[in-house]
Image (cartoon, rainbow, N blue to C red):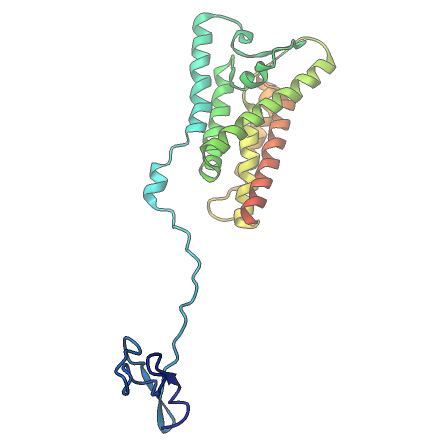
Length: 255
């Protein structure tokens, strides 16, 4: 028997024994639970070396079809249904738009109007176009970010857009009424576009229609032409906020 074979020391009696036995032949002490597996190398048999288990990173759980079907874009639905109920109440009561959160320039110190104005409408057509934009882009955005982050982002796009529009209108002078969610819809579109483009690394695939996105953005930007309460600067500012937020979310996700 070669020296390499006699390489196991019995802890009970200190004798050197073969590595192929499970019990010490001198004292009968148990050396291992089972004998090692042998493999032929040349003219002799050697113990097969033990392999350490490889470390495996946990796999991400695949998105199940049931998960997609169970998803409910609550933030998007609130941004659409809330103004729809509010405009019905406004039409039924006959009160002016300023009663329901619209901003009237010259602006007073009612800061809460920056939060309420993106949800105030006087025209059903304006609400319909914004609702379509939110249903298309905000729902996809909410599916990627989650309900709470999407709600905060939509509110930030609408409110900061109103803040910028009010500041510019105050500087221009005159009387202006600013309301509606064109900044919110453009922010959702820009954020969705930034995240979706990062996901595809600039590639155009079957579910990514660049021309459709441009058309939707153009329609939302042209809303002030058809409704005087929609402000182009509110839309541009909201879109900028959404685009920056989408880029930040994409960078954080890839890091």
